[in-house]
Image 1 (cartoon, rainbow, N blue to C red):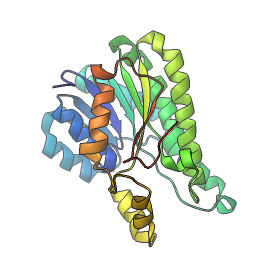
Image 2: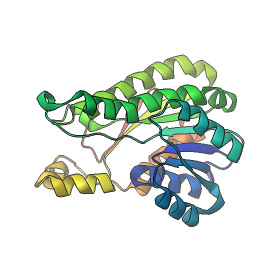
Image 3: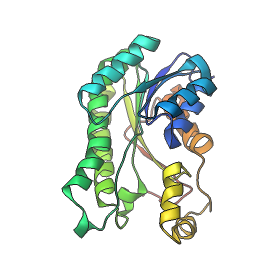
Image 4: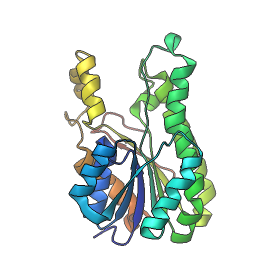
Length: 247
């Protein structure tokens, strides 16, 4: 198994893409601390995957919880090899209607927790030759309408990921970014609330389908966490069926 003996932290780890990554990691031999605020979903995933998963209810928007999350992973599994910063909440609004609260929500659940957890986990990752996987979005790369707060935070995450890739390579840490398109609960809600958007999204996707959180996004996250990706850092991988083709 490609991740045998590795320990991962996955934020937003019991729903959507995070759940898909947690499942993919466990199937490849990893132990996962799944960080989320949904106790019911956390218990269900623990029942499904067994002792390889520990659920931690933590508020990633609280800076002090970053150290608590890392400590919980060390206590449960002995260390941290992989940090997956997946969780992120946001609200949509046209740019002229975007409020400070909208910006704060996106940065406080996306950018700042990514920054805090990367720093909190650095010593563990350095000791073990670890991996950071952060998350971007086509919303930021392409500047999608009504996604100003989310796009700004996602592009800020890409920026610090490149900085960390440059600074932390000497510490044996590689840092990469996934930009996904997957059919999660959040995307399903977006489709229901936005008539015609599903057809529009798929029309702009050469593969003409949404990705699966485990089979598509999770498998790429497995690759990035494995030794197969040890010579890759500072990259954004578009796991979106071809929706965005970076040059």
